[in-house]
Length: 373
Image 1 (cartoon, rainbow, N blue to C red):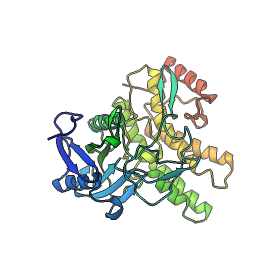
Image 2 (cartoon, rainbow, N blue to C red):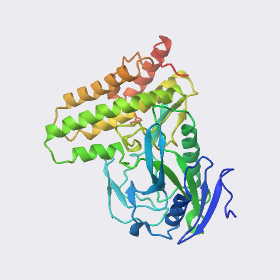
Image 3 (tube, helix red, strand yellow):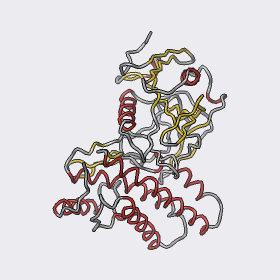
Image 4 (cartoon, helix red, strand yellow):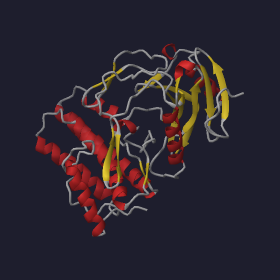
C-alpha cells in the first residue's frame, strides 16, 4: 500500500525500508525489469551503501548501474540506469564552470548545497519573454536530492519531450521516480525525491569529453586540432536535432555542454527548462537562438586557455556558428545581419542584447524571420 499519495495516476507503487524508507513510483511506460526495480530500491533506501557497491558516478548526485536488459531508442542502446537524487559527492566549481570532486565519497541525501564552491549566477538558463531575455541564474542551488516541485518539473517536461516523436534528438527516458518518507527529508512543498533514467553505457557528458581532451597533456597544436574536430562533429549532430525540436514547437532552454551525452548522437538531458514556442514571433526566435548559441559559446570558452590569438579565437567561434547555421538550418535562419559571437546571453547588462532584439524585430518586418510553427 502507498504510504504517500502518488504524484501521478497509473503508476506502480513499491515501498521499501532501508536506512531510509522510500516509495518508488514506476511510470506506465517504464521498461524496468523486476531486477532493476529491486536494485533501485536497495540503493535509494541505502539498504546497500553505494560506496561499497559496484557503481559509477555522474556529476554530483547521480549514480550509474547496469540495466538488466538494454533498451534501444533510434538505434542507440541505453544500457545503464542513472539514479539521481539519492545522495551526493562534494563538488567544487571554479569561475569557468569546471567542476571537480572535493571528496571521493558518496554521502546520503541532504538538503545541503553539494557544490560548495559554486559562484553565484554561474549555473542557470535564459529564455525570452515580452521580447526580452530573462535570466534564471541566481536561484540555482544543487542539492543532494530533489524537492517535490523540481521532481514534478523534471518528470513532466521529460515525458513531454519523450512524446514528441523526435527522430534526430534522443531524450533519455524517465523510468520511475521516488520519494523519501522520512521527516528529515521533506519541507513545506513535500517529500524530497529522486529520479531514474535510462542512459547510454558510455555516458560521459560532452563537456567532460572536451575537458579530457584539453587536459590530455599533448602539444597545444595537436590538442587544439582535436578539440576543433570534436566541436565540429558535435555541432553537426546536435543542430539537426535542435532544428527538429524547434519545428515541433519547443525550445530546450539549457543546451550547455553538460546536458549532452555524446558527440556521435544527439542525446539531450535535463528538460525541465523547456519552453513552448507559443509566444510572439520574436520570443520564439530568441528562444531558438539561445538553444543554438549556448553550446558554441561554451565550447569556445573552454579553448581560451590555449595560447592562441584572440582574433583567431573569434574567427573560430564565428566560423563554427555561421557554418552550422548555413549547413543545418538553412530554411529557418536566413537573415543573420548581427554577429552572434558577440552576444553574451548570460550577461543581462550586455550592450548587445538591445541590438539583438532590434535585429529580431527587423527580421520580423522583412519576413526574414524564423519559420516558427
